[in-house]
Length: 306
Ligand code: GDP
Image 1: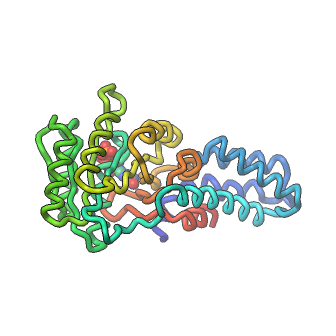
Image 2 (image 1 turned 90 degrees about the vertical axis):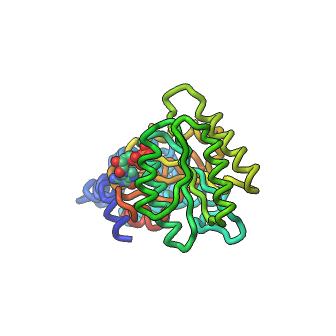
């Protein structure tokens, strides 16, 4: 818990400590304070529309005299943020991250733009899911970048999880087909599938992902069972824009928010929940193997404001 708290300390400083200093010496909430609050929320990358909506509600609370002091104001903001994060959790799939007993292999596709921390996340995820008692297999289906498979192989070795790979340039759907076959033959519990993230080139990544989804679904009923989109918290609102491109075609069911430890803009979690309407499953809080935590909205909001 405290590791997560430490990871989001820069965001906490930019948000609640700023609010505290603004409030110092004031007896009541005035327009200037609300302006500062608005600034702090936007600076934390909560997003302009979300911030304006929150302030609207806060102003109504003040008008009704339900919010009279800083403590009440903070509580109101916490409540609003938590509500947004929880609404996203309720949207679509359930919020548990555990692997259901009756689905084998449970197929997880990991998608996202190059550089966001996809490979690292797969390594951490494999480690975590294995530690929970599952047999894990990784499929290296980013056959576009030569280095991608090498990096993944290092993580596979580090975590002691086998990797299915093929030559660079092989059809990713063919590598996936192999991996699905291997997973079924070995009785693998969870297959984690890496995918390409070359959004900037015009070669059709989305068509490739769609084809992979079809292959998965043909080989294993209901697969992929989870498609996690990896977003880099440091890229903030730009990451959101990239994300939208994946949402249209990649069948995303949840988000992994990486590098939350490296930014004062950790409020992006709220913007993601609000604008993409997808639950944040995991947060990356460092580069090491166990620096991936289950994202808990309540803990996040509490840690931001305590
Ligand atoms: P990919 O291109 O999306 O596969 O990205 P990589 O997994 O290679 O990660 C890119 C860089 O981000 C590497 O230097 C990682 O160590 C780093 N990285 C990944 N996740 C995190 C995280 O949660 N926190 C921090 N601080 N760095 C991370």
